[in-house]
Amino acid sequence: GYSYQASGQSRAGPFTSTGAILLPHGAATVIDIAALNVAGTVAKGRLTSLPGGLQGTLALAGGGIDGTLGLSPVGDDQQVDVHLALADASLPGPPAIRIRAGKVDGRVLVADNSTNVTGTLIARGVQSGSISLARLTASAQLVNGKGQVRAASSRPTWSSAPSSAGYWTGL
Image (cartoon, rainbow, N blue to C red; front, side):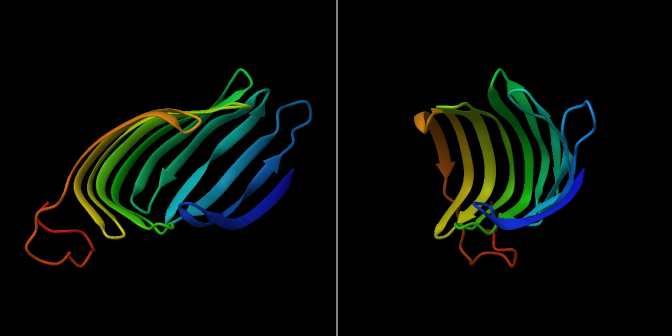
């Protein structure tokens, strides 16, 4: 096998990663992710290369994001199940996004000619640029970026500036 180191830029911000690509004789290739660091969140896990895609789970912790990304092939397509809890999460972006508390559950299915996204977001204390929301609830069902997104939000009520953590008080 081989050890690897990687770095780059993602929509969530800069990332670094270390791990190993294991090539066992007579068995499937395994990507052993020792650490994938993005915006203070670290993902760790093992992904096995199977016909149709990758199989395995990445456990996420730190940076206000905890949960799992479960990868599995569905026929020749790649599926990713997303289950995340957010607590004072901060993504540098661009655009920068902060969420005081929340939860994300969803599924992404990537096929040769389409991408399907189904999921829900429940969040409190959302800040991005000049947008501040006390609460945000959203659900999406998209195929290739088209479909339905339903969202409900409420703006914060305040009489003072943001707290030192950057979130509006009194939410």
